[in-house]
Length: 320
Image (cartoon, rainbow, N blue to C red; front, top):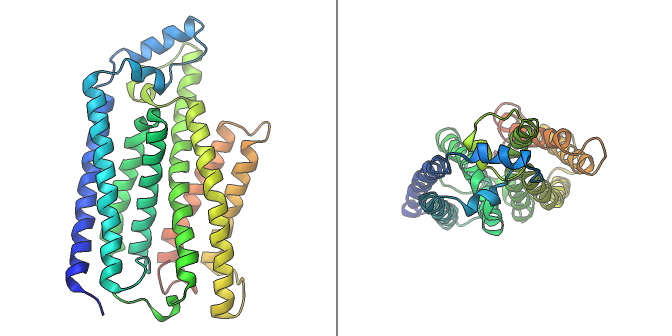
């Protein structure tokens, strides 16, 4: 039995979360705009003086204007509030339906985005310089939330019969965690590709005046963040694939059947295994391995959207 009032409250929380994240994006943009006006030139001067490389995000924080720090703090607060409200979306929907709140694509997508936001917040608190990638994390988050609300929304209701299994809590939960972590890892790699190109041009004395790129953390920091989050997410995703195979055996009588969802989950696993291997292999470190990580994120998104919404298979019933 579904509680309509709690279901309506969940929908309201969803809208509030989108609004808070949107305000956070504006605040993160304002932080970049209020940053030092001559930062790119200062970076070139330090490189020319043998300063050991371009100024990192941590270097620029020391001279960051007070108003920029205040706006950045406000952006972090808005992001944290948005995460709390978004958690409320899932909690109230679960309470309304009396089940785990990830039984369809709307709930699954909402949970993935929440994990990504929480991962970013943890990283930004532990490494303050990473706060400057906030706009590049929150902008995709807002777009994802809007898309989820417009195209994936499903009325609160009971689980379909095929999903009424204790394996839902194991398989789908770990898939959500893995996807959310890979989301942040992929964005960190994209930012690494942008920043590393900028640093190369700075070293060659041919850097464009780009305040936004200059405010990003150093390429080394972004590469390290992408790698560490992928290392953390990979065993979780591995466990999700294994748990899915075990659930498939109990539900369909076989561990693996090359269903489209299974196939692309395995492809994603192979891509991330290749990234982790490339990241420690001479000749593949740096930009080549970062591109592999970006491909991994693209495969994850393709698996969620195209495989669920366009192709047909045994996983189509639940949208997960």
